[in-house]
Length: 405
Ligand code: FEO
Image 1 (cartoon, rainbow, N blue to C red):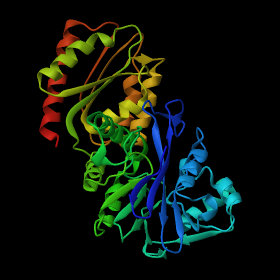
Image 2 (cartoon, helix red, strand yellow; image 1 turned 45 degrees about the vertical axis):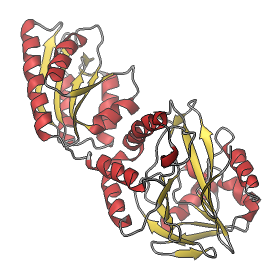
Image 3 (cartoon, rainbow, N blue to C red; image 1 turned 120 degrees about the vertical axis):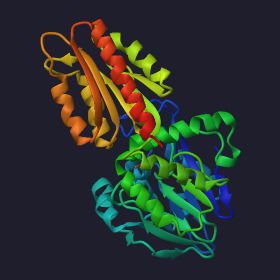
Image 4 (tube, rainbow, N blue to C red; image 1 turned 90 degrees about the vertical axis):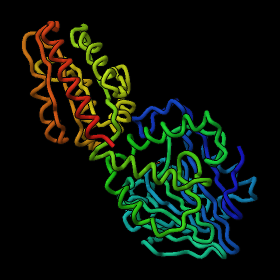
């Protein structure tokens, strides 16, 4: 792999990570992910922005790309750590041993994490919003963007070129053969937008209020290129990814899209028996429905659908007097991510006694969901349960259509 030139003196050096591991140890990356670092060379000094974790040979890959630019780690004067999560800092110890003279630039909040994760205390220089470093004809300007998505995060901006190094913000899952948005093939676009949405829902969604605040903070900047640490570099239309992130952040408290995430579990088919009538009713009402069977499908995909949808259908049986455990996991994930203010219906079967609803109700309250109806029944659904399910599904579809963007 070769480094990509963003502009004179600025290059991306990066690694491709395959689908074998889970991202953050939890999220599947069926299409892989890119780890992007950037080299900024001024007339007098060189900066390296965000490291890579030594994951699938990433460090040697980056070293070899640096070599093709005529550089080694020992040429780096400033290492900028926009964010401390180990996918961007995992090789810090190795790099410090190779280059004990470089300065490590991070926010004040990041300093204790540099020590806690890597035992590094020397070489560290804390910066705050508006601080600058002159590289000779290129300036690094720092902007703290707390909680996008860790408290210590910041972004780095080069005003001479209008390049914003945004770390996780404006990033995506997926590997792309082309570096820039204006080079992508149709096939790559078909991957990029859904994988940006999934990445956002999985990694960033909990912090949406900070995303909106951060975008507002960045608005005075003349941003001509957005260079995130995952995904592609937005050169042709950097505003597209900023607008997409703004839209995704606004989904948190709704309204979202006029769509429904239909999430269901079934033990012996008695809960599943209502799926066809509910689904048909929703589709006849003209609402797009995203079907997810749990636990067959990973929470990552369920969360992505729930995040973009104004409506939710939760189908699950009672299990040992409580909710079906895999659905509890899903609801826990939705609660952590603050999938707030959705229109919801629930249905499900029980055997000797109910209990799922009792455990479901606190999620409804905590997430401020508007529950338009519940269809719960012993054993198999009767004709009257089916009629009630159709009635509730119609009410849900109407409510979703009236409320959505
Ligand atoms: Fe890509 Fe929050 O690390």
